[in-house]
Length: 560
Image (cartoon, rainbow, N blue to C red):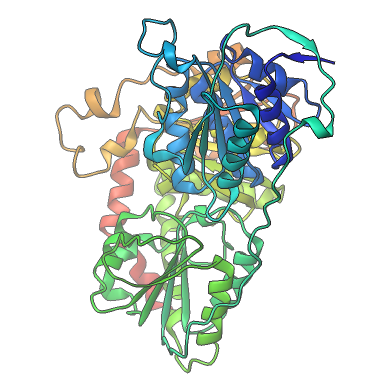
Protein backbone atom coordinates (compact mmCIF):
# COMPACT_ATOMS: atom_id res chain seq x y z
CA UNK A 1 0.00 0.00 0.00
CA UNK A 2 1.23 3.47 -0.81
CA UNK A 3 1.87 5.77 2.14
CA UNK A 4 3.86 8.89 2.90
CA UNK A 5 7.61 8.72 2.47
CA UNK A 6 7.98 10.37 5.89
CA UNK A 7 8.68 7.42 8.17
CA UNK A 8 8.26 9.37 11.40
CA UNK A 9 4.69 10.21 10.36
CA UNK A 10 3.96 6.53 9.75
CA UNK A 11 5.45 5.74 13.16
CA UNK A 12 3.29 8.40 14.81
CA UNK A 13 0.13 6.96 13.23
CA UNK A 14 1.06 3.48 14.44
CA UNK A 15 1.74 4.74 17.95
CA UNK A 16 -1.56 6.63 18.12
CA UNK A 17 -3.37 3.37 17.47
CA UNK A 18 -1.13 1.38 19.82
CA UNK A 19 -1.78 3.71 22.75
CA UNK A 20 -5.55 3.69 22.50
CA UNK A 21 -6.39 6.55 20.16
CA UNK A 22 -9.35 5.61 17.98
CA UNK A 23 -10.46 9.01 16.65
CA UNK A 24 -8.41 11.73 14.98
CA UNK A 25 -9.76 15.14 13.94
CA UNK A 26 -7.95 16.41 10.85
CA UNK A 27 -7.83 19.98 9.56
CA UNK A 28 -6.70 20.46 5.95
CA UNK A 29 -3.31 22.01 5.22
CA UNK A 30 -0.15 21.60 3.19
CA UNK A 31 2.58 21.14 5.79
CA UNK A 32 0.57 18.44 7.58
CA UNK A 33 -0.02 16.41 4.38
CA UNK A 34 2.33 13.55 5.42
CA UNK A 35 0.56 13.30 8.79
CA UNK A 36 -2.87 13.22 7.15
CA UNK A 37 -1.71 10.52 4.72
CA UNK A 38 -0.22 8.32 7.44
CA UNK A 39 -3.27 8.59 9.68
CA UNK A 40 -6.02 8.36 7.08
CA UNK A 41 -4.50 5.21 5.55
CA UNK A 42 -4.80 3.26 8.80
CA UNK A 43 -8.05 1.33 9.01
CA UNK A 44 -7.97 1.35 12.83
CA UNK A 45 -8.07 5.17 13.09
CA UNK A 46 -11.41 6.86 12.49
CA UNK A 47 -10.92 10.33 11.03
CA UNK A 48 -13.17 13.40 11.03
CA UNK A 49 -12.29 16.42 8.90
CA UNK A 50 -13.05 19.87 10.38
CA UNK A 51 -11.73 22.89 8.49
CA UNK A 52 -11.75 25.40 11.36
CA UNK A 53 -9.03 24.38 13.83
CA UNK A 54 -10.82 25.97 16.79
CA UNK A 55 -13.96 23.94 16.07
CA UNK A 56 -11.80 20.89 15.39
CA UNK A 57 -10.16 21.12 18.82
CA UNK A 58 -13.46 21.54 20.65
CA UNK A 59 -14.96 18.65 18.67
CA UNK A 60 -12.01 16.50 19.76
CA UNK A 61 -12.60 17.68 23.33
CA UNK A 62 -16.22 16.53 23.10
CA UNK A 63 -15.18 13.14 21.73
CA UNK A 64 -12.58 12.55 24.43
CA UNK A 65 -14.91 13.74 27.16
CA UNK A 66 -17.70 11.44 25.99
CA UNK A 67 -15.56 8.32 25.58
CA UNK A 68 -12.86 8.77 28.22
CA UNK A 69 -10.29 7.81 25.56
CA UNK A 70 -7.53 10.00 24.11
CA UNK A 71 -8.39 11.81 20.88
CA UNK A 72 -5.80 13.32 18.55
CA UNK A 73 -6.09 16.39 16.35
CA UNK A 74 -3.78 17.32 13.50
CA UNK A 75 -3.22 20.72 11.91
CA UNK A 76 -0.80 22.53 9.64
CA UNK A 77 1.81 25.10 10.64
CA UNK A 78 1.58 28.84 11.24
CA UNK A 79 -1.41 30.33 13.05
CA UNK A 80 -3.38 27.06 12.77
CA UNK A 81 -2.04 25.66 16.08
CA UNK A 82 -2.97 28.86 17.93
CA UNK A 83 -6.62 28.00 17.35
CA UNK A 84 -6.16 24.85 19.46
CA UNK A 85 -5.39 26.96 22.53
CA UNK A 86 -8.87 27.43 24.08
CA UNK A 87 -9.81 23.74 23.83
CA UNK A 88 -6.43 22.63 25.19
CA UNK A 89 -6.82 24.96 28.17
CA UNK A 90 -10.29 23.52 28.78
CA UNK A 91 -8.91 19.98 28.52
CA UNK A 92 -6.07 20.85 30.92
CA UNK A 93 -8.44 22.00 33.66
CA UNK A 94 -10.96 19.20 33.04
CA UNK A 95 -8.24 16.51 32.86
CA UNK A 96 -9.16 15.29 29.38
CA UNK A 97 -6.50 13.52 27.25
CA UNK A 98 -6.21 15.50 24.00
CA UNK A 99 -3.21 14.97 21.71
CA UNK A 100 -2.37 18.05 19.64
CA UNK A 101 -0.20 17.11 16.65
CA UNK A 102 1.05 20.18 14.81
CA UNK A 103 3.06 20.14 11.59
CA UNK A 104 5.91 22.66 11.43
CA UNK A 105 8.69 23.97 9.21
CA UNK A 106 12.21 22.83 10.06
CA UNK A 107 13.62 24.92 12.91
CA UNK A 108 16.19 26.69 10.71
CA UNK A 109 13.31 28.27 8.75
CA UNK A 110 11.65 29.88 11.79
CA UNK A 111 11.94 33.70 11.90
CA UNK A 112 13.36 33.70 8.35
CA UNK A 113 10.32 35.25 6.59
CA UNK A 114 9.13 31.76 5.64
CA UNK A 115 5.43 31.65 4.81
CA UNK A 116 3.07 30.15 7.39
CA UNK A 117 5.79 29.85 10.01
CA UNK A 118 5.71 30.95 13.66
CA UNK A 119 7.52 29.88 16.84
CA UNK A 120 5.58 26.66 17.49
CA UNK A 121 7.88 24.93 19.95
CA UNK A 122 6.23 25.16 23.37
CA UNK A 123 3.46 27.35 21.95
CA UNK A 124 0.86 25.99 24.41
CA UNK A 125 2.96 26.86 27.43
CA UNK A 126 1.31 26.00 30.71
CA UNK A 127 -1.84 24.41 29.22
CA UNK A 128 -0.46 20.99 28.31
CA UNK A 129 0.98 18.34 30.61
CA UNK A 130 4.05 18.10 28.39
CA UNK A 131 5.28 19.20 24.96
CA UNK A 132 7.51 17.22 22.59
CA UNK A 133 9.36 18.50 19.51
CA UNK A 134 10.66 15.98 16.97
CA UNK A 135 13.15 18.36 15.33
CA UNK A 136 16.53 16.70 14.80
CA UNK A 137 15.51 13.34 16.26
CA UNK A 138 16.28 10.09 14.47
CA UNK A 139 13.45 7.64 13.92
CA UNK A 140 13.99 5.73 17.17
CA UNK A 141 14.20 8.87 19.30
CA UNK A 142 11.18 10.39 17.59
CA UNK A 143 9.15 7.23 18.20
CA UNK A 144 10.14 7.27 21.87
CA UNK A 145 9.11 10.94 22.19
CA UNK A 146 5.69 10.21 20.69
CA UNK A 147 5.25 7.19 22.97
CA UNK A 148 6.17 9.31 25.99
CA UNK A 149 3.61 11.92 24.94
CA UNK A 150 0.81 9.38 24.59
CA UNK A 151 1.60 7.74 27.94
CA UNK A 152 1.77 11.14 29.64
CA UNK A 153 -1.64 12.14 28.28
CA UNK A 154 -3.26 9.16 30.01
CA UNK A 155 -1.08 8.48 33.06
CA UNK A 156 -2.03 9.69 36.53
CA UNK A 157 -4.29 12.69 36.13
CA UNK A 158 -5.11 12.73 32.37
CA UNK A 159 -4.55 15.86 30.32
CA UNK A 160 -3.52 17.27 26.95
CA UNK A 161 -0.09 16.97 25.33
CA UNK A 162 1.54 18.60 22.31
CA UNK A 163 3.63 16.88 19.64
CA UNK A 164 5.30 19.28 17.18
CA UNK A 165 6.47 17.63 13.95
CA UNK A 166 8.85 19.65 11.73
CA UNK A 167 8.64 18.31 8.18
CA UNK A 168 10.91 18.77 5.17
CA UNK A 169 9.63 18.57 1.63
CA UNK A 170 8.55 16.61 -0.34
CA UNK A 171 5.28 16.63 1.57
CA UNK A 172 2.80 14.75 -0.62
CA UNK A 173 5.12 12.10 -2.04
CA UNK A 174 4.08 8.50 -1.43
CA UNK A 175 5.79 5.17 -1.93
CA UNK A 176 4.94 1.50 -1.64
CA UNK A 177 5.27 0.73 2.05
CA UNK A 178 5.51 -2.73 3.53
CA UNK A 179 6.13 -1.85 7.17
CA UNK A 180 5.92 -5.05 9.19
CA UNK A 181 5.62 -5.42 12.92
CA UNK A 182 9.39 -5.46 13.24
CA UNK A 183 9.70 -2.15 11.39
CA UNK A 184 7.22 -0.25 13.54
CA UNK A 185 8.10 1.30 16.90
CA UNK A 186 7.71 -0.77 20.03
CA UNK A 187 4.82 0.06 22.34
CA UNK A 188 5.37 0.53 26.06
CA UNK A 189 2.32 -0.85 27.81
CA UNK A 190 1.00 1.44 30.53
CA UNK A 191 -1.00 -0.21 33.32
CA UNK A 192 -2.98 2.23 35.43
CA UNK A 193 -2.83 1.93 39.23
CA UNK A 194 -5.31 -0.52 40.68
CA UNK A 195 -8.10 0.67 42.96
CA UNK A 196 -6.57 1.37 46.33
CA UNK A 197 -7.73 1.16 49.91
CA UNK A 198 -7.52 4.51 51.71
CA UNK A 199 -6.95 4.86 55.43
CA UNK A 200 -8.37 8.11 56.83
CA UNK A 201 -7.56 7.23 60.42
CA UNK A 202 -10.11 7.04 63.21
CA UNK A 203 -11.59 10.54 62.89
CA UNK A 204 -15.26 10.96 63.76
CA UNK A 205 -16.35 13.79 61.51
CA UNK A 206 -19.93 14.28 62.78
CA UNK A 207 -22.15 16.03 60.21
CA UNK A 208 -20.53 16.00 56.76
CA UNK A 209 -21.35 18.24 53.80
CA UNK A 210 -20.06 16.83 50.49
CA UNK A 211 -19.79 19.37 47.67
CA UNK A 212 -19.38 17.95 44.16
CA UNK A 213 -18.30 20.06 41.22
CA UNK A 214 -17.98 19.05 37.54
CA UNK A 215 -16.71 15.50 36.94
CA UNK A 216 -16.58 12.96 34.19
CA UNK A 217 -19.21 10.21 34.61
CA UNK A 218 -17.84 7.47 36.87
CA UNK A 219 -20.01 4.54 37.94
CA UNK A 220 -17.81 3.75 40.95
CA UNK A 221 -18.02 7.34 42.22
CA UNK A 222 -21.80 7.35 41.71
CA UNK A 223 -22.18 4.13 43.72
CA UNK A 224 -19.97 5.41 46.53
CA UNK A 225 -21.91 8.67 46.65
CA UNK A 226 -25.28 6.90 46.79
CA UNK A 227 -24.12 4.98 49.86
CA UNK A 228 -22.95 8.15 51.56
CA UNK A 229 -26.10 10.09 50.66
CA UNK A 230 -28.19 7.45 52.47
CA UNK A 231 -26.52 8.24 55.81
CA UNK A 232 -28.37 10.65 58.14
CA UNK A 233 -25.17 12.58 58.89
CA UNK A 234 -24.18 13.22 55.25
CA UNK A 235 -25.68 15.88 52.97
CA UNK A 236 -24.60 15.99 49.33
CA UNK A 237 -24.70 19.16 47.24
CA UNK A 238 -23.92 18.04 43.71
CA UNK A 239 -23.95 20.42 40.79
CA UNK A 240 -25.68 19.10 37.68
CA UNK A 241 -22.35 18.74 35.85
CA UNK A 242 -21.05 16.41 38.59
CA UNK A 243 -22.89 13.53 36.87
CA UNK A 244 -24.02 12.23 40.24
CA UNK A 245 -27.50 10.86 41.00
CA UNK A 246 -30.42 13.25 40.68
CA UNK A 247 -31.41 12.43 44.28
CA UNK A 248 -28.68 14.73 45.59
CA UNK A 249 -29.82 18.24 46.49
CA UNK A 250 -29.57 20.97 43.83
CA UNK A 251 -32.58 23.29 43.92
CA UNK A 252 -31.57 24.99 47.15
CA UNK A 253 -28.88 27.14 45.51
CA UNK A 254 -30.66 30.43 46.38
CA UNK A 255 -30.67 29.40 50.07
CA UNK A 256 -26.87 29.48 50.24
CA UNK A 257 -27.39 33.23 50.39
CA UNK A 258 -29.34 32.64 53.65
CA UNK A 259 -26.82 30.69 55.77
CA UNK A 260 -28.95 31.10 58.89
CA UNK A 261 -31.38 28.56 57.40
CA UNK A 262 -28.69 25.93 56.82
CA UNK A 263 -27.39 23.50 59.45
CA UNK A 264 -23.68 24.02 60.05
CA UNK A 265 -21.48 21.05 59.05
CA UNK A 266 -18.66 19.66 61.15
CA UNK A 267 -16.69 18.76 58.00
CA UNK A 268 -16.82 19.79 54.34
CA UNK A 269 -15.53 17.37 51.69
CA UNK A 270 -15.03 18.60 48.12
CA UNK A 271 -14.68 16.52 44.96
CA UNK A 272 -14.65 17.43 41.28
CA UNK A 273 -13.87 20.71 39.58
CA UNK A 274 -14.67 24.38 40.09
CA UNK A 275 -18.07 25.20 41.62
CA UNK A 276 -20.37 27.25 39.38
CA UNK A 277 -22.60 28.73 42.08
CA UNK A 278 -21.31 32.02 43.44
CA UNK A 279 -23.61 31.78 46.47
CA UNK A 280 -22.31 28.30 47.33
CA UNK A 281 -18.73 29.51 47.05
CA UNK A 282 -19.47 32.43 49.38
CA UNK A 283 -21.23 30.15 51.85
CA UNK A 284 -18.26 27.77 51.99
CA UNK A 285 -15.79 30.61 52.42
CA UNK A 286 -17.83 31.74 55.40
CA UNK A 287 -17.53 28.45 57.31
CA UNK A 288 -14.79 29.67 59.62
CA UNK A 289 -13.31 26.92 61.79
CA UNK A 290 -14.81 24.03 59.79
CA UNK A 291 -12.21 21.59 58.39
CA UNK A 292 -12.20 21.06 54.63
CA UNK A 293 -11.00 17.89 52.94
CA UNK A 294 -10.32 17.55 49.21
CA UNK A 295 -10.58 14.05 47.68
CA UNK A 296 -9.30 13.16 44.21
CA UNK A 297 -6.44 11.56 42.34
CA UNK A 298 -3.53 13.86 41.57
CA UNK A 299 -5.05 16.50 43.81
CA UNK A 300 -2.54 19.36 44.03
CA UNK A 301 -3.03 22.02 46.71
CA UNK A 302 -6.10 23.89 45.48
CA UNK A 303 -7.84 25.96 48.12
CA UNK A 304 -10.59 28.01 46.42
CA UNK A 305 -12.49 28.57 49.68
CA UNK A 306 -9.49 29.39 51.85
CA UNK A 307 -10.39 26.62 54.31
CA UNK A 308 -8.48 23.52 53.12
CA UNK A 309 -7.09 21.33 55.93
CA UNK A 310 -6.49 17.93 54.26
CA UNK A 311 -5.69 16.67 50.75
CA UNK A 312 -6.55 13.01 50.12
CA UNK A 313 -4.74 12.06 46.89
CA UNK A 314 -6.45 8.89 45.70
CA UNK A 315 -9.11 7.72 43.25
CA UNK A 316 -12.29 9.59 44.17
CA UNK A 317 -14.39 6.45 44.64
CA UNK A 318 -11.80 4.94 47.00
CA UNK A 319 -11.70 8.12 49.06
CA UNK A 320 -15.49 8.23 49.31
CA UNK A 321 -15.60 4.59 50.38
CA UNK A 322 -13.12 5.37 53.14
CA UNK A 323 -15.24 8.35 54.18
CA UNK A 324 -18.26 6.04 54.37
CA UNK A 325 -16.35 3.88 56.82
CA UNK A 326 -15.89 6.90 59.09
CA UNK A 327 -19.48 8.08 58.82
CA UNK A 328 -21.43 4.81 58.91
CA UNK A 329 -21.35 4.54 62.70
CA UNK A 330 -21.94 8.21 63.40
CA UNK A 331 -24.73 8.88 65.90
CA UNK A 332 -25.48 12.25 64.26
CA UNK A 333 -29.10 12.59 63.11
CA UNK A 334 -31.17 15.08 61.15
CA UNK A 335 -28.42 16.81 59.16
CA UNK A 336 -29.16 15.21 55.79
CA UNK A 337 -32.91 15.36 56.40
CA UNK A 338 -32.73 19.11 56.94
CA UNK A 339 -30.88 19.62 53.66
CA UNK A 340 -33.37 17.45 51.80
CA UNK A 341 -36.28 19.36 53.34
CA UNK A 342 -34.76 22.67 52.28
CA UNK A 343 -34.11 21.37 48.78
CA UNK A 344 -37.67 20.05 48.48
CA UNK A 345 -39.10 23.35 49.71
CA UNK A 346 -36.95 25.32 47.27
CA UNK A 347 -38.04 23.08 44.37
CA UNK A 348 -41.71 23.57 45.24
CA UNK A 349 -41.21 27.32 45.62
CA UNK A 350 -39.46 27.47 42.24
CA UNK A 351 -42.26 25.52 40.55
CA UNK A 352 -44.86 27.86 42.01
CA UNK A 353 -42.77 30.92 41.11
CA UNK A 354 -42.45 29.73 37.49
CA UNK A 355 -46.22 29.80 37.06
CA UNK A 356 -45.91 33.59 36.94
CA UNK A 357 -44.84 33.73 33.29
CA UNK A 358 -42.72 32.36 30.48
CA UNK A 359 -39.06 33.11 31.20
CA UNK A 360 -35.83 31.29 30.43
CA UNK A 361 -35.85 29.94 34.00
CA UNK A 362 -39.39 28.59 33.74
CA UNK A 363 -38.92 27.16 30.24
CA UNK A 364 -35.83 25.21 31.31
CA UNK A 365 -37.97 23.80 34.12
CA UNK A 366 -40.60 22.82 31.57
CA UNK A 367 -37.89 21.22 29.43
CA UNK A 368 -36.73 19.18 32.41
CA UNK A 369 -40.29 17.95 33.03
CA UNK A 370 -40.95 17.12 29.36
CA UNK A 371 -37.66 15.29 28.92
CA UNK A 372 -38.16 13.30 32.13
CA UNK A 373 -41.71 12.34 31.18
CA UNK A 374 -40.56 11.23 27.72
CA UNK A 375 -38.37 8.56 29.39
CA UNK A 376 -36.03 8.50 26.36
CA UNK A 377 -32.33 8.60 27.27
CA UNK A 378 -30.28 11.56 26.07
CA UNK A 379 -26.95 13.22 26.76
CA UNK A 380 -27.10 16.80 27.96
CA UNK A 381 -24.61 19.56 27.12
CA UNK A 382 -24.79 23.07 28.53
CA UNK A 383 -23.21 26.30 27.43
CA UNK A 384 -21.79 28.75 29.95
CA UNK A 385 -23.28 32.07 31.05
CA UNK A 386 -26.82 31.80 32.38
CA UNK A 387 -27.71 28.47 30.75
CA UNK A 388 -25.62 26.37 33.17
CA UNK A 389 -27.00 28.38 36.09
CA UNK A 390 -30.66 28.08 35.09
CA UNK A 391 -30.32 24.36 34.33
CA UNK A 392 -28.44 23.71 37.56
CA UNK A 393 -31.60 24.29 39.60
CA UNK A 394 -33.34 21.27 38.06
CA UNK A 395 -32.59 17.54 38.32
CA UNK A 396 -32.68 16.58 34.62
CA UNK A 397 -33.12 13.02 35.82
CA UNK A 398 -33.55 11.71 32.26
CA UNK A 399 -30.05 12.72 31.18
CA UNK A 400 -27.46 9.95 30.94
CA UNK A 401 -24.66 12.51 31.36
CA UNK A 402 -24.31 16.27 31.66
CA UNK A 403 -21.33 18.19 30.32
CA UNK A 404 -20.31 21.83 30.29
CA UNK A 405 -16.96 23.43 29.49
CA UNK A 406 -16.38 24.49 33.11
CA UNK A 407 -12.62 24.01 33.04
CA UNK A 408 -12.18 27.59 31.85
CA UNK A 409 -15.89 28.53 31.82
CA UNK A 410 -15.73 30.28 28.44
CA UNK A 411 -18.62 30.56 26.00
CA UNK A 412 -16.41 29.50 23.08
CA UNK A 413 -16.69 26.02 21.63
CA UNK A 414 -19.90 24.88 23.34
CA UNK A 415 -21.55 23.81 20.08
CA UNK A 416 -18.47 22.12 18.64
CA UNK A 417 -17.87 20.24 21.91
CA UNK A 418 -21.44 18.92 21.93
CA UNK A 419 -21.23 17.93 18.26
CA UNK A 420 -17.96 16.09 18.87
CA UNK A 421 -19.57 14.18 21.72
CA UNK A 422 -22.59 13.40 19.53
CA UNK A 423 -20.31 11.87 16.92
CA UNK A 424 -19.19 9.24 19.45
CA UNK A 425 -22.73 8.05 20.25
CA UNK A 426 -24.92 8.79 17.21
CA UNK A 427 -27.63 6.36 18.32
CA UNK A 428 -28.41 8.39 21.46
CA UNK A 429 -29.69 11.97 21.22
CA UNK A 430 -27.23 14.65 22.32
CA UNK A 431 -29.06 17.77 23.48
CA UNK A 432 -27.26 21.11 23.73
CA UNK A 433 -28.87 23.94 25.72
CA UNK A 434 -27.17 27.19 24.78
CA UNK A 435 -27.66 30.94 24.78
CA UNK A 436 -27.86 33.02 21.62
CA UNK A 437 -24.50 34.75 22.23
CA UNK A 438 -22.75 31.38 22.77
CA UNK A 439 -24.45 30.01 19.65
CA UNK A 440 -23.35 32.98 17.55
CA UNK A 441 -19.80 32.75 18.89
CA UNK A 442 -19.54 29.11 17.79
CA UNK A 443 -21.52 29.43 14.58
CA UNK A 444 -18.84 27.73 12.50
CA UNK A 445 -19.54 24.44 14.26
CA UNK A 446 -22.83 24.13 12.36
CA UNK A 447 -20.82 23.85 9.14
CA UNK A 448 -18.95 20.76 10.35
CA UNK A 449 -19.31 17.68 8.19
CA UNK A 450 -20.92 14.57 9.62
CA UNK A 451 -23.09 16.08 12.35
CA UNK A 452 -25.23 13.15 13.51
CA UNK A 453 -28.97 13.20 12.88
CA UNK A 454 -29.42 12.65 16.62
CA UNK A 455 -27.93 16.07 17.51
CA UNK A 456 -30.42 18.55 19.01
CA UNK A 457 -29.73 22.18 19.89
CA UNK A 458 -32.00 24.46 21.90
CA UNK A 459 -31.08 28.14 21.72
CA UNK A 460 -32.40 30.61 24.30
CA UNK A 461 -32.98 33.70 22.19
CA UNK A 462 -33.27 36.56 24.67
CA UNK A 463 -31.18 39.30 23.15
CA UNK A 464 -27.57 38.37 23.80
CA UNK A 465 -25.38 37.76 26.84
CA UNK A 466 -28.11 37.69 29.45
CA UNK A 467 -25.68 37.11 32.31
CA UNK A 468 -24.69 40.79 32.01
CA UNK A 469 -28.29 41.71 32.90
CA UNK A 470 -27.97 39.60 36.05
CA UNK A 471 -24.62 40.37 37.62
CA UNK A 472 -24.21 43.50 39.73
CA UNK A 473 -21.01 44.49 37.88
CA UNK A 474 -22.80 45.33 34.63
CA UNK A 475 -26.58 45.31 35.03
CA UNK A 476 -26.78 49.03 35.95
CA UNK A 477 -24.37 50.34 33.31
CA UNK A 478 -25.54 52.54 30.44
CA UNK A 479 -23.26 50.53 28.14
CA UNK A 480 -24.79 47.21 29.18
CA UNK A 481 -26.73 46.43 26.01
CA UNK A 482 -24.25 47.78 23.45
CA UNK A 483 -20.96 46.66 25.00
CA UNK A 484 -21.82 43.65 27.16
CA UNK A 485 -25.07 41.89 26.23
CA UNK A 486 -23.83 42.55 22.73
CA UNK A 487 -25.49 42.82 19.36
CA UNK A 488 -26.61 39.32 18.41
CA UNK A 489 -27.38 38.55 14.76
CA UNK A 490 -28.58 34.97 14.71
CA UNK A 491 -31.19 34.18 12.05
CA UNK A 492 -31.65 30.63 13.25
CA UNK A 493 -34.41 29.65 10.84
CA UNK A 494 -32.30 30.63 7.83
CA UNK A 495 -29.18 29.05 9.30
CA UNK A 496 -31.04 25.82 9.99
CA UNK A 497 -32.20 25.67 6.38
CA UNK A 498 -28.70 26.46 5.08
CA UNK A 499 -27.02 23.75 7.13
CA UNK A 500 -29.70 21.07 6.78
CA UNK A 501 -31.18 21.27 10.28
CA UNK A 502 -34.83 21.00 11.18
CA UNK A 503 -36.15 24.20 12.78
CA UNK A 504 -38.69 24.75 15.56
CA UNK A 505 -39.68 27.85 17.49
CA UNK A 506 -41.48 28.38 20.80
CA UNK A 507 -42.12 31.48 22.92
CA UNK A 508 -44.15 29.93 25.76
CA UNK A 509 -44.50 26.75 27.76
CA UNK A 510 -47.61 25.87 25.74
CA UNK A 511 -45.76 26.23 22.44
CA UNK A 512 -42.83 24.26 23.84
CA UNK A 513 -45.14 21.40 24.85
CA UNK A 514 -46.71 21.45 21.39
CA UNK A 515 -43.42 21.00 19.50
CA UNK A 516 -41.18 19.09 21.88
CA UNK A 517 -42.13 15.56 20.80
CA UNK A 518 -41.56 16.39 17.13
CA UNK A 519 -38.30 18.18 17.88
CA UNK A 520 -36.81 15.24 19.78
CA UNK A 521 -38.21 12.54 17.47
CA UNK A 522 -35.86 10.85 14.95
CA UNK A 523 -36.13 12.78 11.69
CA UNK A 524 -33.05 11.93 9.65
CA UNK A 525 -31.24 15.21 10.35
CA UNK A 526 -30.20 17.34 13.32
CA UNK A 527 -32.57 20.01 14.59
CA UNK A 528 -32.60 23.43 16.26
CA UNK A 529 -35.30 24.75 18.59
CA UNK A 530 -35.37 28.50 19.17
CA UNK A 531 -36.86 29.46 22.55
CA UNK A 532 -37.74 33.13 22.48
CA UNK A 533 -37.98 35.05 25.75
CA UNK A 534 -37.53 38.64 26.90
CA UNK A 535 -34.04 39.10 28.33
CA UNK A 536 -35.01 41.95 30.64
CA UNK A 537 -37.86 39.93 32.10
CA UNK A 538 -35.65 36.83 32.37
CA UNK A 539 -33.15 38.73 34.48
CA UNK A 540 -35.76 40.53 36.61
CA UNK A 541 -37.61 37.32 37.51
CA UNK A 542 -34.42 35.38 38.30
CA UNK A 543 -33.10 38.18 40.51
CA UNK A 544 -36.48 38.44 42.22
CA UNK A 545 -36.50 34.74 43.11
CA UNK A 546 -33.01 34.81 44.56
CA UNK A 547 -33.48 38.11 46.37
CA UNK A 548 -36.76 37.08 47.99
CA UNK A 549 -36.07 33.37 48.41
CA UNK A 550 -36.88 33.38 52.12
CA UNK A 551 -40.37 34.73 51.42
CA UNK A 552 -41.01 32.29 48.58
CA UNK A 553 -39.76 29.21 50.41
CA UNK A 554 -41.26 29.94 53.83
CA UNK A 555 -44.74 28.45 53.20
CA UNK A 556 -43.14 25.15 52.16
CA UNK A 557 -40.79 25.10 55.13
CA UNK A 558 -43.71 25.71 57.50
CA UNK A 559 -45.30 22.52 56.15
CA UNK A 560 -42.25 20.38 56.96
